[in-house]
Image (tube, rainbow over all chains, first blue to last red; front, side):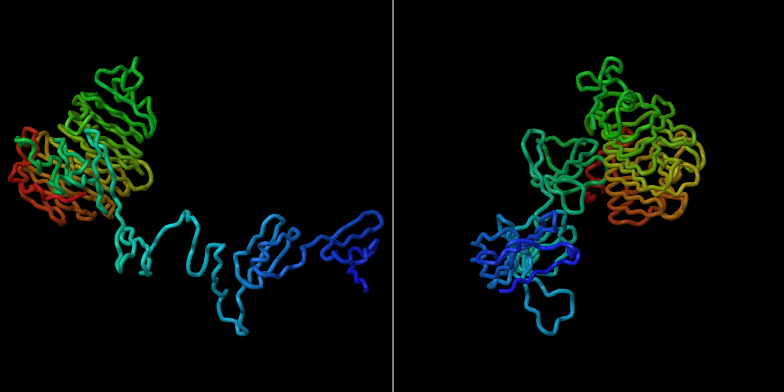
Length: 225
Length: 286
């Protein structure tokens, strides 16, 4: 069998020595040569391996082996200790290419991104905006409200509530209506903000003008001004 | 963001500003604190003197038990900057320096008075000065002053021109945007000595740089003299659910009334509302 050796031009003054005679098991081995004083070697990726996805993932080839999944059309890389998959799937190209940049991505569950969904990801530094999608579970922010589309309508998520320790050490549920500054105790409708006479400025969700709110609730049997 | 304490029984020399060994004077707090620090005032009376206040929080004991800052009938001006807040404080018995304000607000400042009382004060300003106004120096960043649950009682003007309670500027030729907000306040004018104010607000540059937002506030003029909203109708007002009794040329708003608010006994300082007051339940949530 004839042996064909490619000699790079920059090494034209050198020469190969001790070329082994190829034999069984030599596929993928490095080519070495000597320029008269130093020994050099070419190392390269191993040959591309083609097999089914399951068979490839079960194999342990040499380091830096590229592989192509014949059944899922995925590209794989073995780094010597684990298989890695490129977050792309090869897509058949028609003879007449469509206008546009790229064909849409299709399923690649290991990456977690598809044209239809995102899975197993944590989102940081992002915001929810408007949403024209009214599928079950769609979310949006509209007019200062966070909303979820459930059972055919947008429903506002409950916000603006808190528990506050009262003067007796207990806790009371308070609500701050959207667009307002005051926190109101839910049961009584009283505000945390007090008038100059010590009464809440809002009582029973009612507000009087001025800095001296009136008693909206009778306390004991005494009403004072 | 340290917290310090002052008390009428404190001591500026032996105290350290702690709750157990408080200082005596507000001046000691100012000289010993930094921007963002808080002064907790025990109940009682303190000297109110001219000072520069940059980014401080000053808090009295309670809404119905304020710390009293007494000017001893002397001239007082506070020059305030940064994000300063004053809560449960009564400012009383002082005059403003000649042709100057009581509270001079620096540019880029957000000043808030919550549950404060302004009582027995004589404004001594010039034609352009107000009871509260911006600094005469600086560029043009916006400023904001907010009064929440505050009482102005027996605040009068000295003889002079202008006689404007709240001014967009304190002199000079400034175009500084100023926002003034009033929520659940009472401005009561009953005294005519030395003289009364002519106007409540003014914007001297006539270029929409003063914004007045007023909600649930009662302004009542019992002096018998004319008190006009503003000399020029050029700035923006958002007036909601307020009472304007005997005030001339009040801009239109929403839910406002002009009836007598029927205080229980304003002459004696009792500003609770009588059961028949039209102001009861006539406010709106804030």
